[in-house]
Image (cartoon, rainbow, N blue to C red; front, side, top):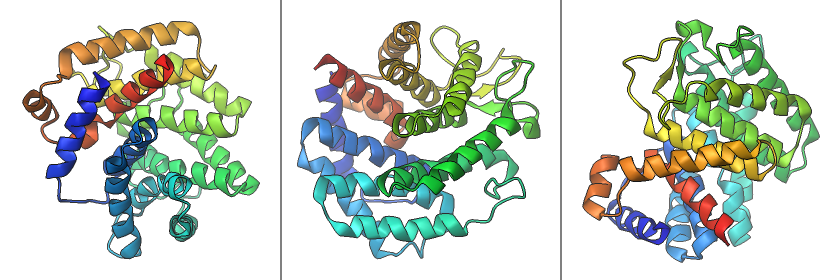
Length: 303
């Protein structure tokens, strides 16, 4: 089935002539490069490199949202690893300067709008983790951990009501939680730290209690009745359950739950038929990236 999904992605890529500098697109290209590494299909690398060549050519001057720039820049390191083209590393250094210059709050977080404070900090830290790992920057690792600890203090409630955003009526976007969980996995994967691990376990234990019929709702709140299910956010956390177990961060029960969630998504929201495929995604295949990521992971596990 993965092969059919990949064929559908190729078909969609062939009809897409637009590029935006958006965090969803940045995550999408991260996934596309994973598909390239899995399949060795040059089409995926060429499509991604064209996007990033334009990204570099503009020198970031036309990008208003600096947080989205950093989310997009995550894949610069993968492009270098696959091509040995130094321009991608040079671009990463330019982006790092943007990171350094971003305004911070007195608490040390990025100075973002309240509603987007978690998501915007995740966008930036995805890039910072790759940068710290590639350049062996111990000071940057310390800074990233500090940012994660600050986020934890802002959003973790000791009454076990989960990571709740007190600033917006104790509600939480499921997608934001999913991205934060993947951010923590990225950190632990490259630079294991017990405190960060404990934050990750607290987050997963908290979000697990809101899983209902193999789906999470769009927003995590105390009362879940009447809320719509969230497909992409559920897929993000499904991937975290599966990958977290295989890396030894989560117990086997999470792998079993992840497989159940995956089958539910597969049977109810995704179809191999190309026309249905487009209809389900509303031609916004960037939001389907987490689902593709699960496919790639399972394909590798099967090898």
